[in-house]
Amino acid sequence: MSQVPSNHPQESGKTAAPPSSLPNQAPRPRLPEGIVGLVVFSVVGYGVGSQLSRLGLDPVVYGLVFTALSGVAGIAGFAAAVLLRIRSLSPFGVRQTSKRWLLIGVGAGVVAFVVKGLAVLAYIAITGDSSTPQTVYAEAGSGGVLSLILATLFLGFLTPLGEELIFRGVIANVLLRHGPVFGVVSSALIFAFMHGINIVFPAALVMGLVGAELLRRSGSVWPAVVVHVVFNLPTVPVMVLAGMG
Image (cartoon, rainbow, N blue to C red; front, side):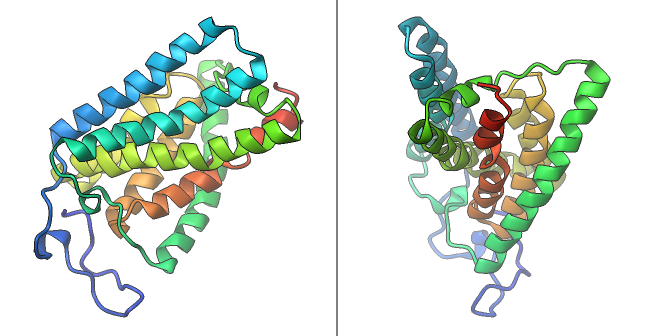
């Protein structure tokens, strides 16, 4: 996989070899993995999500299920992509990384969180659209301490894991075959469009750009997961405190 740099020092002090030079390296993910992953993600995420409102669930229960759904859909899409042909995790970026890259992920997450706020404000100023589809997250956390904890865990950890596995582990790796700029930008745009054209779009675009670039540079999906955790973790508590639920 060409996106793994050959000049980044690892914790052992040795230079990392490009995955293509490693013995018995599994095939790199290609378009079929990307298509299958996105189809499964969409069926589980949007298909199941569209049916939830018909069940007459309590708003807090509905919110919790909905909040967990994106992470579950991402894991399902990732699993389908892996099992399609390659059946190995390493080509999808699920490989060990250094503490240095994880710390970079924390710092990048803080920066991305600030930039996200500015990007959302710019979007509102340009379009006049301040509506958000994410009030359901506040509803999920508005049922008391337990629901607040569960909603925060789902959005702050499960969602980053699932979405990074599918959108960076699969989609970005597929598109990075065509060059770093194309891979990073196009995968970020796909990620953003999957969130719809609303105030979440610019936030998702920022997350997608940062996550894909960290994947490209580190060769591992875990720094991007860390960024996403930092990016998402405050969301539910802030929305609940703001009375959005």
